[in-house]
Image (cartoon, rainbow, N blue to C red; front, side):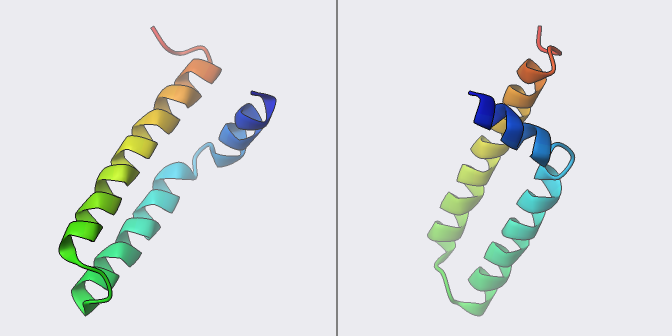
Length: 66
């Protein structure tokens, strides 16, 4: 758990930027035909879930959750 807290603190303020860059790369690869549309949609869905989990975890870590 300590390592997860350490990771979340390191990523604080960076998660959105990292996710945006990853999704731009996925979109580029899809448009170039490197990956299929359904794979792109799957990666996008996974990124949304990971983003929500990271935000909830960060909120709980900082004691801001209800």
